[in-house]
Length: 368
Image 1 (cartoon, rainbow, N blue to C red):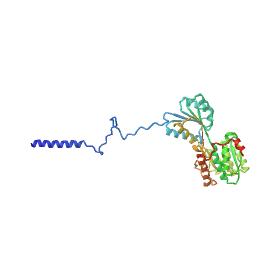
Image 2: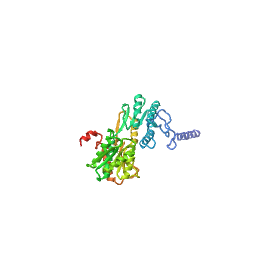
Image 3: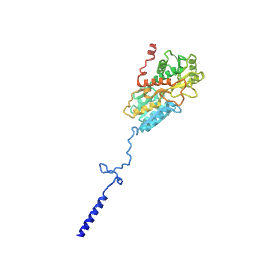
Image 4: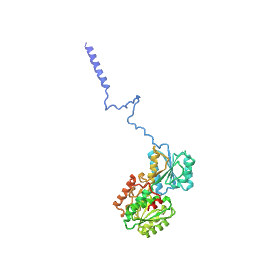
């Protein structure tokens, strides 16, 4: 009997030990959880990152020698940054002459590039020819010019919107001391009408008595001629001369510093602490242009239809208004003045101020 009782007690103790061995506590349970298929899941492992939309694709920018050209440097910067975001392989093909544009584009087509961007009007003839010969070999874009090939997406700008802001600044800076305003442009043709129209309308919004003097250098690289014309305009009473003379702008800037009249640059920030008479610059932003293109190309919004971009797309504007500068603002351009121009920029952006549907030069002059 005692043996039986001892055996029973031993059995109960053994069962208690086994039951204790089977318990699990949160502190000691480090085994991975099993998934639905009974396979262990490693909770600490990182999930595989999704593929970027540009992985395996190649995009090329074909342009002049970049050098110190800010307009081209900003394109290159945007292309490389977009490559990091979307995962494509970027290439910049710099061209020393017109023949190199076509040679480079043909080579890029042969190498299977998915998008070829012509960076500036110099690329126009080459991209028109290559895109016509190889319509399905790649996608094609031309910045700041237009060609006939329907499969080339051409990007133009509403320069009149930036010119309007410059015109307002011109009137606010001169502050009624003169009602005559000058402008030195490259050519007189229809291509310059957007600049002239926007500038005049901007000035007139602040100075209804304004009159204008326009002269033309007839060259992209003639600072001596630009300086001569700017001085002539100053002698006619112009206290502000809008310079849109491309490489000739430096001549206008020299004249402004020597004679003491105000002026503005084009395309990039050309304000200069050594020349306070350059009070602003009209911006044509190639950085945001390339970014806009990349955002469209790697989305469902991509088409080969031509586009025209302005303030709303962050590609057109004016220094101190839509674009910041590292250089100080001229004391003649007050915070109150800038507030007026910034409001105009917002009105253009929202569509409240419509500069898209502008008249032809003939219609404009007939209405006067």
